[in-house]
Image (tube, rainbow, N blue to C red; front, side, top):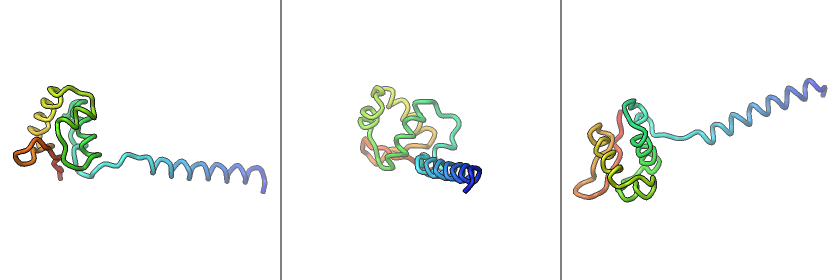
Length: 102
């Protein structure tokens, strides 16, 4: 093999490895959900990111512990998200669940 062939082989290998690494560490989001919303504030986006990753019911307390936001901040942001139809309350409990937007 010539130096040119070795250089081309190494460059091709580097490109393939970088593509594999990028694919492995790309964040995974549910399709057709809150990411389509353009009117979310930064705290609302943080909450929705966590809720999306959890992919299950959640409580104010869990969000407070996870984010470090105050209970009032969580309550106010959840109210905004419920008004926008992104989150709904589960039954007569203190649990919430994300709503999928199709």
